[in-house]
Length: 274
Image: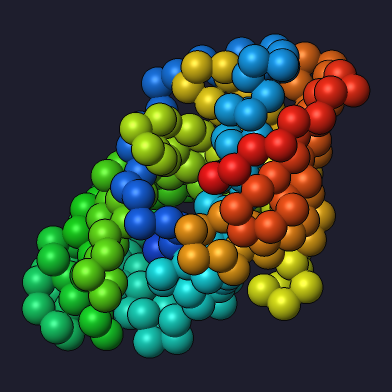
């Protein structure tokens, strides 16, 4: 397989993985413009840092096939997977130039889809494109080389069952599918960014997550979690723990029930309610 064709296949697979797999809460994503330096933990902000890590963990778990509204996990939805793979595989002719621009036939429920660009930089555009009850609108910019590629989503909207999720995300991968992503989101009027994440586990025993999250006011925190289970009606975890590190210090969170949690910093533990 030549470099162009191989790159196209990889890009298509990753595009669909994120398009279908990135769910989350019913809040909409928004671009992050807050502090990017390391956070400095304190007794005053430890609860805010705990909230940032909790929301980021929920975002990561939803995107990896947890209880997110789009579900599907890393394998995606097979018919939608086929749609995107087909769209990308037909996008180039043997000389590496676009073989067409209008692919609206993939929108079996209405709307339109199109492609433009070349093998090094391309744009896939969707306008109210409905496939199997899911509506896609927006553009994804794909940049690729012989050994790596990235996809940038800017205000890319996905609507399912009356809920719209807006993606502002960048994914960067090598040609072995080793990927990292950065996703911006907002909750209760506060903006966050999560990146460099990984997750394992299930919705029975709980999830182990590691990631970096940015809080708009306080900045960057790296965290790991153990046994997180997001099964409460209010959207927060009923069990598990999170350990955060920032500026050489540690903050820990233990989820006691659906309504209460304990945050510990510098030997001082305080209980909070959602």
